[in-house]
Image 1 (cartoon, rainbow, N blue to C red):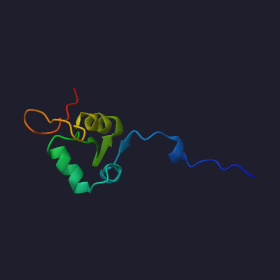
Image 2: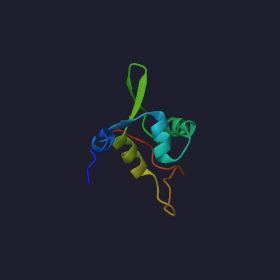
Image 3: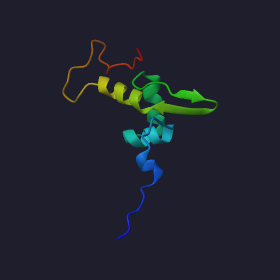
Length: 85
């Protein structure tokens, strides 16, 4: 039996994602991602020319600040806001 070489996408770590891929990863629509960014729940994308990319580590850090189900929310009654600092 011959071993197949895995496609490059499976061996190169993903560092950033486009709007559509962020939406797929979060199981929401692209419009929902943009709304979460507006509300401060997700980071703003990085920009290179006209291309916008979200860093995977920043999305993960932002999600870690969201309350878990059954957990009390902050004083303002909103989940944690994204803060790059």
